[in-house]
Image (spheres, rainbow, N blue to C red):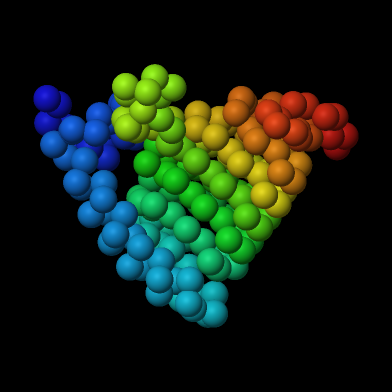
Length: 188
């Protein structure tokens, strides 16, 4: 069995089997994050929210970042957030596979960003399959959208409300629907 730290293996995209001897570390980390989330999600002070998010992500959170809580994150340390990012109410980030949010991104209410999934095979379904999500500069993600594992959303793109994004999105387009498809190009 691989003795490499489970979080490093997750960031490297390794499928984690349910009987992995380190799987308990994921649960422990999730409960530690939840403890900080309870504090963050009851705060109304933007500076305190950013500080708690910094502790959850173990990374710099710029003063230009605004988060309207509640925000739900299962781990946090695999989430990186750029400058001038706005995250609206009731968003969910599953970040074991990694989530990168570049500068100028707008995330509407009830958005789910899910860098984790499970195999289709019923015999393997309890395994965790991580794949990173990369949201590039100036993206706008509409209310209730879901971004699935392994997706990159190109610069200046818009994800329409309610869309389910399962494939990469090019720069400067609007995508919508289930599954999301290109609706139109964005003129500059």
